[in-house]
Image 1 (cartoon, rainbow, N blue to C red):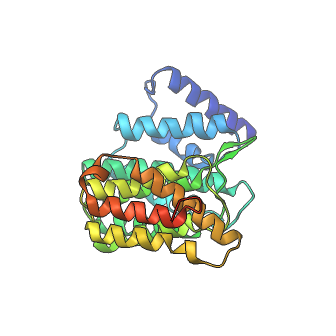
Image 2: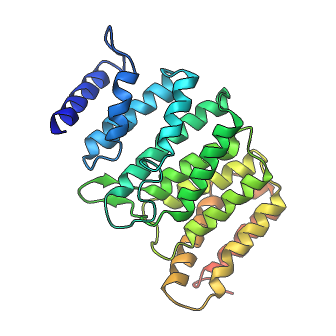
Image 3: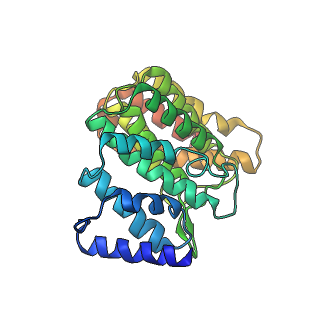
Length: 281
């Protein structure tokens, strides 16, 4: 096992140095199986700097995969050995597999968005897996002292931002995504401190800027997000309130739409005012 891992690292370092080009006789699929095997490895150089970066180059920039290869890759990434691997665990290292499986899913969805190739059944499968992941993930740590980034909430947000833009996404999906975002902000476990709020805000920002959902739906959701300010005071309530407040601020300052859309700006300010215990009421 150790020799296989060492060989994979050596190969990926060499591929990186050669600008992600393969040598004569090599095929992308020669490396993918092992990359998937070690996608959640505790060693950050292998997991983050080599495996994810190689997927990013080959899928996003260099188009090294055929449509069929991407469909097969996606079906593996969303399975119980990857995105759903020990989903619900917290405080162990299984989060690394989940959090680093969701990143290439985002890359594949981006490729589908630019040039559709997924069947509707493929899209439904990835949609259901992503929503389940974001709803049930309990290990929300950002950066681990030894293993580096876990960042499941941020990585999942990247994939959801791609998902909502796909041609198959309808109003029902947009509302489902808003619902799981609310659940993530009101998670009862963790106050986000590694800019997860910015990554999550990007999803809603994209909904607004691309007119994927009526403003009325967004404003209603924003006001409902602030309802946690009225909960009984306890730790769960404080986590929900702080995460929601930071998210709303991130969204408010994201773009100029706040100066052109009075309805949205008013909803953001109302929600922030309700969530801010230090504001003058």
